[in-house]
Image 1 (cartoon, rainbow, N blue to C red):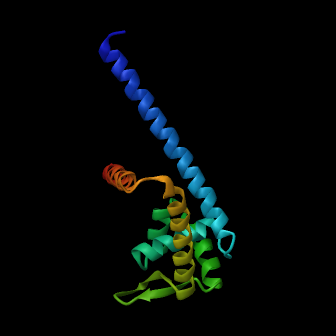
Image 2: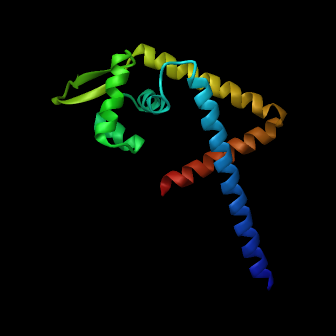
Image 3: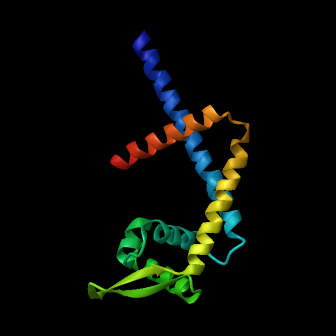
Length: 152
């Protein structure tokens, strides 16, 4: 094995470790998120739907289906349950009355806001042993990774 082969193996090992760590971190965050959600009367898919509406505003069921990678019928059922629990409501688009948009209600916004704050508090507790410089470097690298992945 020459020097280039050794470097290639090292790069593969590094990428493999990064992928594994991101997968494990994602799993821990997902589990912690479910624990937080257990205090509320919403399911993880409802949380994701509410989060999209919270971040991007009103959208059609089709738009929400695409964001969540769910079938239109599944998203319709999800919205029906959220509407029954006064988390969202259907509203006619003022520019095109044929279009119905899903609108986040105060209760849905309150739940999302509380859940996100609890998740942020959890992460803050995890980062307590990191220096300020390490936290800033982590933030910069995660932001860059996210931006590069969104370009694809």
